[in-house]
Length: 189
Image (cartoon, rainbow, N blue to C red):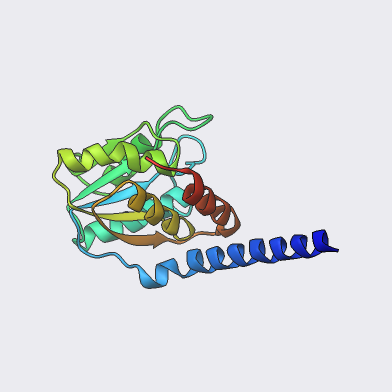
């Protein structure tokens, strides 16, 4: 009987942690908005082969970065993402090309093309922030990804950050709950 009670208490605790994390991730965008900064940082994501198209996850992120750039939120854009499975080119290169096609001058785009995770996006981009004396960053990614970016930013002592989410056709909230909890528990610098 005691084992059953402990099991029920554990299941209720796990469910509560899941629901609280899920709620936090969903509500993150409502309380965190972009503010003028030194640089916009776009997080890579699978490009669907070797091109970026509007309407895809990565295309939506880039379109959001373009919107902020054109509105004058920041004069520079960091594109961060390595070469994914089945890709010939890094996500950063594909993103750079997309931005240039849409009118961003190449000198205003900074590439980080070695990362394969959110943690690496931020870890490998941090020296770029120092090198260019950037003290504030707008993180641009899918809506469901922003809370995890905020968590990693805190762990890596990032400068002032604001956030802007891109539309998602299928939000990955369940995946993000697991990733957020894993990053919260296991990732340290």
